[in-house]
Length: 517
Image 1 (cartoon, rainbow, N blue to C red):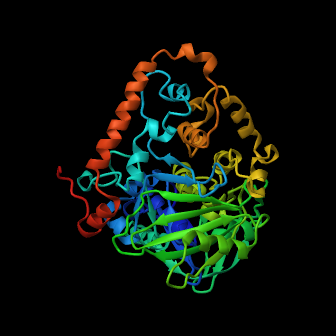
Image 2: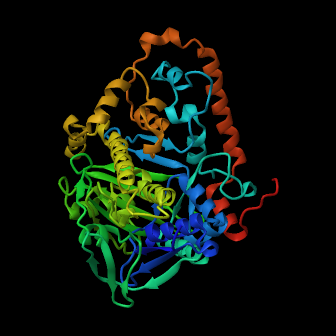
Image 3: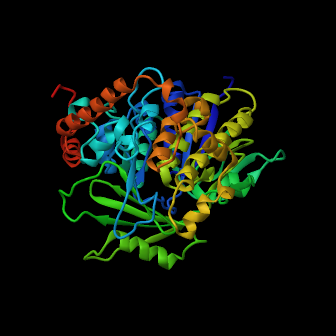
């Protein structure tokens, strides 16, 4: 590197501080001094969130940053997340009858050859276990309100795959503390203007508290406002509302009825007439929100649905409405500016893709960062990879809606083939005769593996006809033995693993102990 380069991250929150901490750690800025990183955070702009979920990749990120897991959980009111329970997504409830399926984080139990899925598909539909319960015991563990690990298993490890629920405002502070410890400079101030140079790149930004600030690379973490990438550089926003209809959320926080109330270790996603609710259990409260389409309902009706879902409470519930447009920018790196987080794009809260996309973006910025020469040298490659990842996430999210048999207009419109992306339509046609496999997806462009698609497909009753190839799967007896073993493992795990609430309390009070139980 010929000279020191400067990165200016505009905006705090999860996106800004996770970006700062990750890059500071990756480049070892505190000791190497070849790069400086500054975060400009406005004191006047709040952070969106009433409890947020993540994907298991966050564990590797936190471990890389050198953050202690117990301390992180304690400071963010975090709890464990083992997957998502989808209630009433398949059919409209009738006569008080409700159905659900589970999307676990644990991959299906591995076996040689074709795996267990073909043998599950060839079983009697009327007597076989739900797919997620047949191929992994995580569903049973989670629904028994057990934790995915024990206290002696230490940081970021355990017998079952997991992520977290956490308070996003508190997470931002944890990340800010870590970033500053790693050498990141923190400035408080508000952007009042952005000046461009003759090439259309950012020359400097103007602030109320620090005057003009310059950098080699500007990272826009200003959320939906997109102060740099959108307002200053005018990178177009690509809406995907023709595929994903939800564009509003009404949210609230409520306390538990009692301090020792059972604590779920999964997100509860419940379908309603024009969208769905999330229900996230943190240590001291539940974060609940109703995500809906303004084309299919009104804000007043949405609030009515949310309050009905919560049930009567002896206290006032304050709600807040958040409007958003599902979509992303096809150019997220423009000249000397790259967008990370909501300024780059947002689909909807389903499957917790927000933090995942931040992790992906900052990892690529770190790996591609030009130590010399034009700072926008990686822009075309970065944009291409991010666009493909967004498009693949759209397919995965749409899958949840497209297979629903619910009768309300919102759901019927979602099942209309016109609203299903072409690539997903092609895959669904193929999956009628063979299940999803790893060759359907390019790993570096995906946030979800082929088995994630399997959990959604077969949880929602999708039919894959393997009857013509039954003779090609001769190990049915061995498969049945493995299915029985998985059930046995689940029975043992529900006895061996602590309750989720008990483990959370122990972690908060004592941390993890790496001595054997």
